[in-house]
Image (cartoon, rainbow, N blue to C red; front, side):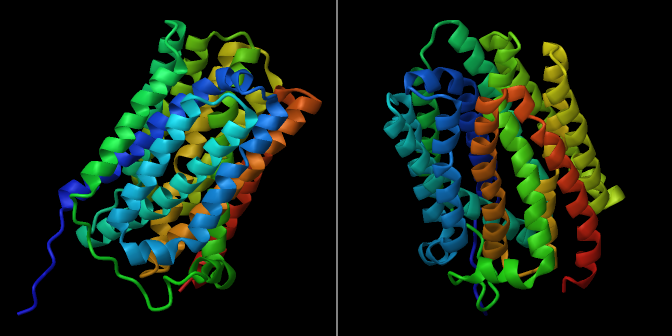
Length: 391
């Protein structure tokens, strides 16, 4: 009688949720801190945007080529390594004083995010297969919840004259704790299709599967929309006269709406389908872009980021779950392919908007949000065509 390998299904899914909350804490707090970190490191908007390229470039490399290494060492160990690297990045950020320091921070963040992204999304898809339940929208939703708490708390603590370095040390402590706890968990076995875990697997999917490329481009434009809020929302609201608390509130509202959107998105997809869900998301992004680019009213700008949160909420987790069904047995390769293209959006977003902002104004640069929404709508329509011939 063959023994069935036991794994900690409750512990694993709890860790998945906890890691996404930690992601939210890190990115939510950093989004509030950028306006203080930029002058501390002697950077303007353009240099900040250019150095921010290092993180997504590094993450893309890991996502495209790191699959074989992660399969070899195991997802449990890989996840702990990724969390330790993110912890180190947070500690270095707390002491950043020059553009060179900021470059090192972005290199570490890129390594950490790349390792954790490919591992945690693949583990979630493994868990969904084992348990016959869809939880991808929910685990991505708690990222938003973490970002809400972190952005509100960070804004309030800054207003109370608490140094951002102190807050970053607290976030680093959370990451180190998760890395340690994770070492004691047993993950579900991966089901890997032959030839899908070598260094070229993600490239092959992008090159040979039109549906994978289309889903990845949906991830790209949704990630671009999310990146606009993560990197530029507090700066834009500050330019309109917002205090640190109000800026943090605006970013928190963005993430609150993303949280609600992701919690309800699974139901929307079930009722109306993947394509219609993404089309609605694209329409919301277009509306948000119009408000951000063409209003000087602070509260309308805050409302615009809330609408942007609804638009950016659903496409990425929806694309991940849809792709796992359309190309079964290739979770690591598919996760790497989609998330690598999604990270390319961060490569494009930060320097593009930063340089346009320096030449004109940040508000003018936010017109790109409208273009992103239109492109996302187009790829949602294309998905309807290519998914019929996906397998």
